[in-house]
Length: 382
Image (cartoon, rainbow, N blue to C red; front, side, top):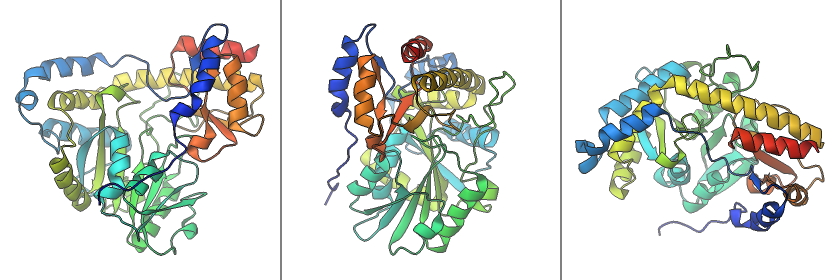
């Protein structure tokens, strides 16, 4: 039957009129809507890409499962940053062409269909729902997936999406809450799909000090105390887009249950969902260059702090997020589109909360340059 139809309010063309207004404002437009990185790719990544430009993995077909070096780099990264020993929990990995592709194809690669139900948070990244729709499966939205009573006894539940740190809200789940989700999902034979793309972007307890260690990351669904020492029924997604500014490289991976990964890898090979060989080398370098990750972490921490202070000055009720790269708050008017119109008049574009399931809210991205954030703060303070 192929892909099924999907429907979603997640359509960036809907903010085109607001962008026209913002561009006409004094000083022009400052776009804080899309979470697209603006900072340089680490030197280590660029050098690795250049060195690998004529490797056998470049002029020949690359490995779907990743080169031995990339697979080793992923395992090293899990150990260094997530306190996870992939081998000890019998986990496998497969690279994906960006995390969005991994999310969108997940339900299809798990062979879900019309009688299957995929649970997700009501306020969440829109591609969870779109991917479930593409597979022809049913979406169940709940206020909090950690409230397992809201889905455990629902017939047909086959998977549960977890997103911590969360896009757009910044919420971070504790290890205890994540462990509860994993245990409940296993009881009913469902798979936990843990989107951890912002794992190293944690701000809870941050002091704006150089002593802050970004590698003290948020709890991972594959951590032994969360998954009870086994990767069975757990899949974790991660991307280098934010930690290493590699969004254009399309470098991400899925790690977890080795039987599920093996099946996914077989299908991915047949449909050509493979990271190019030189990019695999660049990805390995990015995973190993943790010093660059620390530099990027400091940039985002500073930008978020400036943005939060400016939004407060403008009249919004908001605080530093616990994690991720966005400031999420209720619209002053109670309607995202009304606030979007007012903000556009001073040249600022936010992301409407309706895109994420909350039309009463707005999301501001910190993935803009220092200059753009400073200019936005100045305008908000007027």
